[in-house]
Length: 279
Image (tube, rainbow, N blue to C red):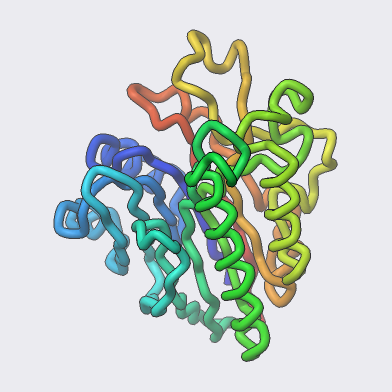
């Protein structure tokens, strides 16, 4: 049983609902984690997703800012989680029930919109940067507790607002002091990843010297020509699920770059990962 996971910072789900539905129709992911939906729960376009074949929907909304939502073809139930120290709507956690002819298991799907961190990479003078570090630390503690209880079927997706590798940015040297690629952030994210041995699926079958981007600034006049991007969006899996990703090979992961050239696009593009859950 193969399932396709997707993640997309949509930068207003109501403004770009037609783009989201187009993506769902073209790529047919089984689960989609959306970030920065920018609406309250009652404003979320539930019916559009249901009509598209995604009846299972969990939303964490906030007026005008932030917000995350997970939509799914597969049954899922909400998990009682709390990551954001400031109680912003920055995550939705669910347990997905994947049942098929050769599969009967479930896994946890954590959809994150990690704080951007402001403009100055110094927590002593920038509360937003401190908030980002605190958020990552809460994630580390949470997953330590989950793994200690034996809950090791974990998938993390979302806009992490960190480009960890040198070739996850268009210029490593020029962005070392730019929030999203500073050593402090990269090291903090690496600690979270290493503590639980999470696999960054984008790099599983790709060398670190391959340039990978999922975000391009709106300020660029010709986005694809200049190609000054960053890989801020991620899909991670726990060790128990790593074989499910390995079974799909290099083709199992994709960054959907053409979406950045659609009319009135998000500054992020969707990413997808196929997992083979066959017993």
